[in-house]
Image 1 (cartoon, rainbow, N blue to C red):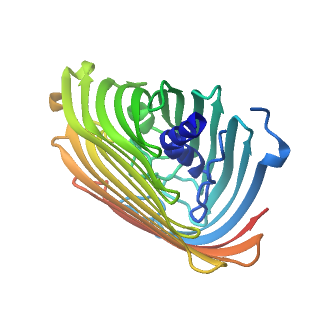
Image 2 (cartoon, rainbow, N blue to C red; image 1 turned 90 degrees about the vertical axis):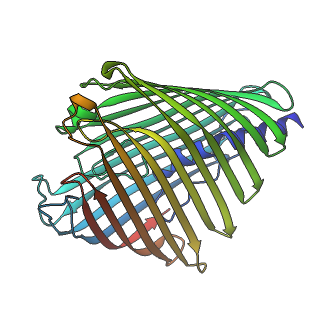
Image 3 (cartoon, rainbow, N blue to C red; image 1 turned 180 degrees about the vertical axis):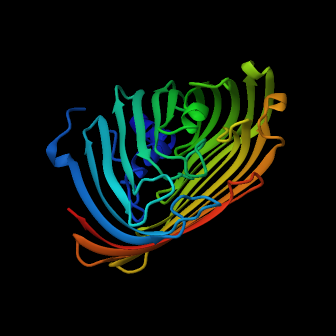
Length: 410
């Protein structure tokens, strides 16, 4: 009985982390592999799985520089390869994903380069030390050029190559039948390859969290949480410290419906600017398998973020993401996603290079359809649209991309 309760607790506390660690290497039609059981021993070959996927896509981009001025359109070719590995034992689970690709533009962009290189590697690991103690670790590492509107604190306009690493190490302990704690450390590292972004935005972010969880029902936990965050910039005087006081709930209402909510307040200090600020804070995530091989996921976040504009102190942002994966027939599947960000940028007062505060809205839409020829081969087509509407001159732009391609997996 206690082992069953621990599995329920671990699933509720780690579900989103495992999903985020693998989703960076999954294609738009490919949901992250379901977490394997964490219920002693070494990994065995007959309980592991390796998958390889190769894609080749041809498309057209009407604004390859993602800019308001000097628009450049081009056709492109995009080969890539993705690999995933999953293994489990009675005590441990392991998921590894890695991939690399290149987007080659037939017409040269304003930056003088004809290609973008993308690479990623993600790992999610859990280990049950005892029936009461669970260890977990996740890491997601990306090297890419395009803006990623699903990640907090990155540029919404094109800014050259960058490296992004998000990590989390956690210890879950079951103190009693209903009470447990989760202690975690989550560092984030951001590095840009080009100026002025390298000087203005290279930083390390460190977040420490302590959760207190009460098992209200076998699959529902009430949560109280304290977080401490420290942001350390490499080259500019914009370091900050933040305290978060949060309350929420993690629930698996059925095998098909899961959600997590955190609501509270954030208190942030900027020592080098001699200023501080307070803001409401909220996180919501949910997933619903509404029919076989068909899922809708929702994510929402409101809070203070690191700025991506020189001369501003921070931005208060609302983020909304909706993703739908739909199986239409045994051979045909469709994909759709929508990401929206509303950013309210705050200047640095007398130190600001930007005269006034400003607002910005970002809309990102992706649609796709795939036809499976057989278990190894498939063809697909898709459309992507991005609009950035900003009060700041030079940051507004719109962009459209279409593609067709083939996929081989084994």
